Image 1 (cartoon, rainbow, N blue to C red):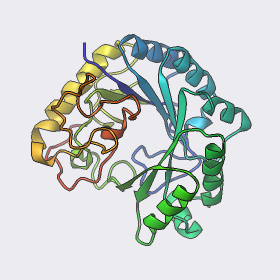
Image 2 (image 1 turned 90 degrees about the horizontal axis):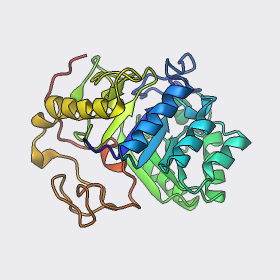
Image 3 (image 1 turned 90 degrees about the vertical axis):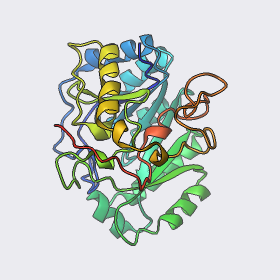
Image 4 (image 1 turned 120 degrees about the vertical axis):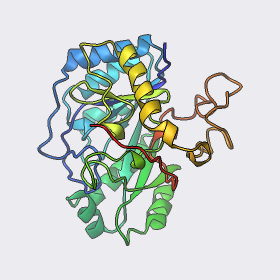
Length: 304
């Protein structure tokens, strides 16, 4: 059976923002899809049974889904580590209690300290609220990582990174805008992918579709709940290997996250078992498949 260490659970396409770079094309008109609470609970149970270690709830904005607290609780009860990727625009008091569980961590995207530029990117003037909730998360000592996305000129990324550091946020990554979804030049462009999709990871979309990762959403392996998750995850890995990996030269594969294992190679095996790019419990399993700033791109055609 294919080992899937990490799963993205995209529980909604609804979001308060309309970010210009959104790969999922989420926004206020988005929906929660066709997956219902029992479907997501069953998916989490199947994930735990097949050895998954961590799930990440994403959207859209996952906090807008009324079943998020129940789903986080169920994942925790299944002994899974949980990350919630939120825009942190609005966090009800009840959600802070959910996030303070020791098996739960938070992630968010940030862009700039310039309110006008932030509004240009997100479609709303929400920079102050997001920053306030970043500080609140740190005051609660909730593990938090932040992705700084370079979307437009004049964002002053390094200044934003410095302020986040002052807030106590030490896990900060920087990436460029991926031309997928809303900013896409074509319906699907595999050259925008990092090259590790499906490698011990998979994504479940709001309609139950399983894909190698949320960014490769046109590469469908099938759909829950009609097909078992383990089978769909295996298909997703095969699709990624067939559609992406053969066209990506080994020398151009993105480097592993330094904090995970400096100098490791995707083909290496770590001393503790598992592949060399996913070696440590303290390393987020999703780190090596998040989009990387990678000048080497696979030359593959996408098949919707």
